[in-house]
Structure formats: C-alpha cells, structure tokens
Image (tube, rainbow, N blue to C red; front, top):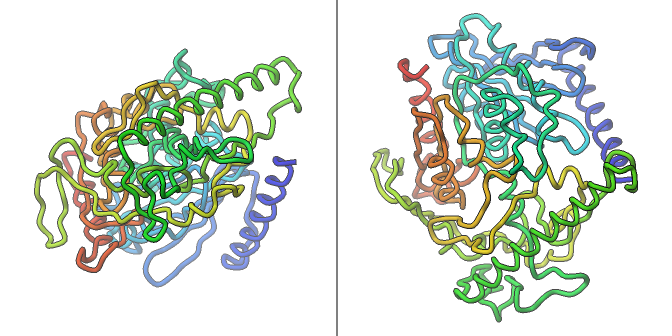
Amino acid sequence: MVNRITRAWIRARRAVLAAVLQAVVGAAVAQDTAVTVSRVTDESVRTVYLRIGANDEALLYEPRSPDAKARVALILARPDGNSFGVPPTREMARRGYRILALNHHGDFPEAEDFAQPLSQAIGYLHTLPGVERVVYLAHAGGGHLSAWYENVAEHGPAACQGPEKIYPCDGKRLTGLAKLDGIVFLDATLGAFHEMSSLDPATSGDKRVAALDMFSAANGYDTATGSARYSETFKKHFFAAQAARDADLIKQANARLDLLKQGKGQFSDDEPLVIRGLGEEAAGARLYLADVSLVAHTRKAHTLLKADGTQTETVVASVRPPLGQQYAGAVNTLRVMSQETTVRHFLSHSAIRLGSDFAITEDDIVGVDWRSATSSLPANAEGISVPTLMLSSTCHYLIVPAEIVFDHLASKDKTLAFVEGAAHSFASCRPEFGDTLRRAFDYVDLWLGNTQRF
C-alpha cells in the first residue's frame, strides 16, 4: 500500500509538472532519449529544460553572454525535493556560471538510482561549448549524495560494498560513472547520521519514557522559549538510549531483510516499515536543536566571513537560536516525528552504527562508526581526491559536522569557511549580519575562479 500510494503521487506530480512545462515551452517533451532539450527564456538568464532518461528532469541556467567563468559548469541535485529555482541556481547563474539543477523521481529513491542520471548529466555538461570542468554544488542533503557519487566514481562499486557496511550496494549500475572535477559543499548534512540523530528514545509503544523526554521541563526543557540546558546526566542517558534503540532498529530491519531474501517476507521485494520517533528531514528529537551549547563551536580555527566584509581565522561559534519548538507538540505524529519508510530504504538511507560511547558534545560528535553507512558523508569524504570547498552557516547547527567532514576529506586541495550569521538557506538570520547570501556565493565564485585549481 505504501509503495502504491507513493507511485501514484509521483505519477500525478510528474504529470502536472510535465503539463506545465509543455505549456511553457510549447512542445511535447520526449521520454525515450537519454537527454531531451526544450528551451525556456527569461530576462536574466537563458533556461533550458532537459529530460534525462525516463525518470529525471533538469533545468540548465546559463548566461546569455558567457565569459571565462562559463568554462566551469555546475551541477546541483538532492536526494529528494525540488532543485529548480533554489537560491544556489540563481546566485551562481547571475555570477556567470552554467548550472544544471537535476531532479530525480522514483519510489523511495536510493543513491544507486541517482548514479546513471548524474553521470549522464555530467556528460551532457561536458558537451556544452567551452566547458572544461564540472563541479557539484551540493547543498544540505545534496552533500552526502555528491560525496557518495564521487567516491564510487573514483573507486568503483567497492567503495560502497565493504563488509563494514550495514547495507552494501549491489554495484550493478555503478561502473563507468563520469567523475567530477570538484565539489562545493554548502551547509551539507551528514547522511545517515543526520537521520539517526533524530531518533527519540522516549518513544516506546503508546507511552513516553519520562526520564528520556527531551521536551519535559523536568529534564531541562523550557516550553516558553523552546530552549534547554540539559544536565550531563540527562545527556549521557539520552545518548546511550539513542544508541541502544538504533542498534535494536537495525537488528529488527536486518531480520526482516533476511526473511525477504528467503522469500518469506510480506512481499517479494521490500516491506513497509513505520518507525515511531524517527524524525522526518530536520524534525525529530535532536538535543542540539533546543540546547545550543551542543555543536556550538569548532575545535580549531578556520576562515570566518564576517558581516563587515573582512575575513579572520578563528574558532568559529554558532549564533543560532533554539530551534524545533514546533516538534514538542508533534511527538506522536506520522511524517513529522515518525517515518513511513521501507526495510530496504531504512537500512540504506538511515541506518548507522552508534557505539556505547556515542555522544554529541559542544565541539564534536563521537562514538559513530562513520564507515558503517553507505550514505555517510564523513566516510565517503575519505575517498574524494578532487578540490573541495566546504562552506557552512553559523546560524545553523552544521558547523561542527562541517569540520568533521573536512578532517575526513582526502583531497589535498580543500577549503573550509563559515559565513557569519547565515542560516541554512544562506539568508541572514538577523539584520546585523548583512547580506549573507551575497557574501556566501561571492566566496564560492572566488574559489571557483582560481585558475590554478580549475
């Protein structure tokens, strides 16, 4: 039922979008070729609509009068959601770059489903006049997708098939992938750990475990402000319970997977799986949302792009406010604080091993087996050799994850910088921080424009 409803929704969504685009471009869009092109225009940039295979579509933004910057083409894609019209596309196109926004459609899309469309899109960009390099512009969840892709493109299917993996890839569609020339991570999430860090250990059946409830005043939560200062004792118990529930979920899902492989499952290919307390996207029981003393600053000094236009090397501190107040009243909801997924999708997308020493501290995340998940950004970063920029926002909770990924990167040409006062979208979170969007993408422009790099 879950997959049937999902397929119906996707078909309806694609039909509406195709109808709109057909009306705009004035021509039917073929579906039986690898890349089909239709043109749309506006006043600022030229926009080209492409169909890549049967399940993928893209918009190419390109300057009307390309200059030297057009030698570097950009690609932007996320594991889910719409990449069309998002701020990075507009900002980079206005700065003179060609940028291809790719959308993938499918039932609970897995990373392997993206491989061939991404490879085809990279190949297409290389056919454009003057293009010499293709760089992935990876925002949010696009971070772990791009890192996984480049790791596999550089090292083959073995990069996601090791015995340490909870759910190894099958590798059948992962050979001969086009390699990238660079990656720009924009406030990238950590992959499976981002999912697992939302797991609510207080959720047990129909009742909540009071001693583990992060939204309880008795445990340090202030309902009036949505903020918290949890005690060391509570954090220790909470993280230990998260790790224990994580291990139990993985064990249960693997047991169902074994039955599926034996032909004894509910269905022949996969099974629906509802996980109570596993938050959707940015939702969930994440202590660091309410308690801003967690993941509060980097361990080392890095480049900070300040509101006054200057740059400094300093230990970078988060300036985010408490977040997630809306989740306190949604603890028993489906598709906010619980996930409706499948056995295989959970294991491939959300499962990662947490040790008995798992903890999130003020400047680190410890006790995580980063290599256990195929979608893990830190693990895949170890296989990336191309030039890499990590740009993170100080008005969000991803500054410590950015430093963790940076330390794992194998690239010899790697840069880590932070935009003071930028939110996850790179817009300013408070007026005193100025035009953070411009500051962020001016820096990306500067980094890409280094002719010794590209």
